[in-house]
Image (tube, rainbow, N blue to C red; front, side):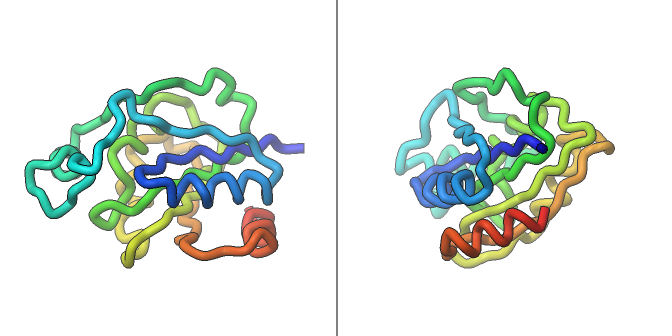
Length: 157
């Protein structure tokens, strides 16, 4: 049986709720990608051109540090990777996470929450953060879901 992980970053708690429900539906382990320095409300103010999130998203080399590391990544075959959509893509901390591990031979299924936009350029933006032997699948925006729907969706992969 393949081992499954749901890894996620959540700035406001919305993606966290989805990730927990998905981990239960997929019978998967759960790992929170936490920033070493937590985001404040001011950091997340996307209307402020000098806010931390805006500065990170405008800097292609930005890689916010994470608080912890998952020591047993090699055990997982499939990783559902969740995050809120920021500026039509994944927050830069997702690249920090991807670049910290070897995902060769693994499948990464993206899922996100969003206030209104779709995945945009997310998959393409993340491809350079993993080896060419990694299969990244653009999954689904999961703003609304039921446990049964999550289970059916997760089983597709």
